[in-house]
Picture 1 (cartoon, one colour):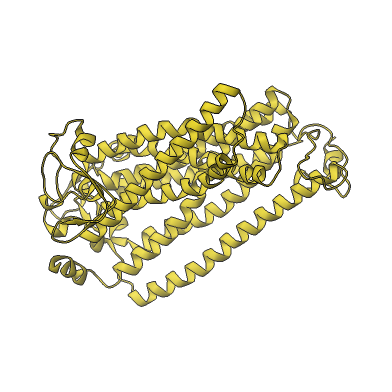
Picture 2 (cartoon, one colour):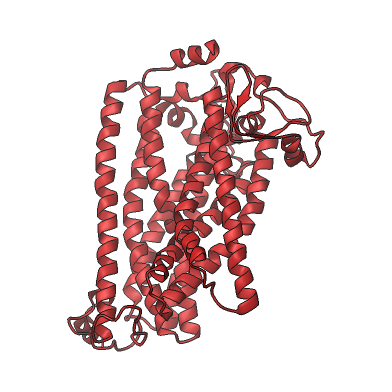
Length: 491
């Protein structure tokens, strides 16, 4: 206990507010990331389905999802830009010493953001203005730019976990930088694919959840069935893949960051035949209370043998490992992520079995209740994954090369706390505005659908108006799909 208190006492006063500010902005930004990375892909799948089968309902869904994509992207650019500034303002020691080594990843992400903005604008403009095939082909690069942006961020983060591609001069500064080695670090592959698949399944469950709620409220028309089935199928296919990738990245952490693995699994002393703790709390003396202890399981999972040696936290000095509290946080985050993933696998299996046996969607209200919650649960799992990764790496900001306390700004802690308060207020306004815009779009679309049907008929949505060609006349117009005047002007 004395050691942990001493470590906290030795930390700069500004370290805690700097961490809290970075954690808040990252946690809020990451809510938007799944849609930013994977919604373009899901939208294009629906778009392709509509073109191939001449399905007006699928094209209408793709058109509306593209509008949501644009709104989400605009807000994501704001929150992402804030994070970029925070790297320089909160962690000048990191950027000042190491920016030349791993900064190329941020450059890649910036170019990807620029390209994605251009392509989204073209894709939105193309509805009703371009030939269907041309419009679809112009949208195909969108998922690639989203993946490129994710690559840039993951390359930088993976380098922080397993830094390489440089030598150190006598003053401890990096020289002889090898850009390719700095980009393609040992953890990049496991982290990148784990992240990408997580984004795909999370975005799929988030989108499908909207239509699952509609199903529970009695909207059983084809519009809602298709709006649910396509994204949920994509997510269900990705879920078991993610479960395998999650096991793979945990084993990579075991091999390349053994102290982080020890924190995530509450391993105090290096040993074989190590038990697995489901939840529980680590104390500064190495004891674990609470949770469920499963004998031998940690060694078995780490190396497929109960005799696998697992490195413990005490293998390094106290100032080079997470504290007991940090290890407990990382452990809980990891267990919650794994637990949510396991439940999602069961939900995906339920969906798959019903489809294989009956060639239809499940009919159980309990299934749709689970589907409605799956999007929120997936976002929570993503948040937990980042917590486990970042807290488990403490006290290092660059693993085994620079500690977080060495990188933090010299700005007064009071100023940072005030800044955190202001950022929270601004972000509440930003996300409140985003929610208001999305709800307004939903209401407008629902009213337009009811007008086409000749009045409010719950559960009935017309499926005759395609985003290509002349639109069906709508009393009062449909601003969500553009005005008839603009259509006349195009012709």
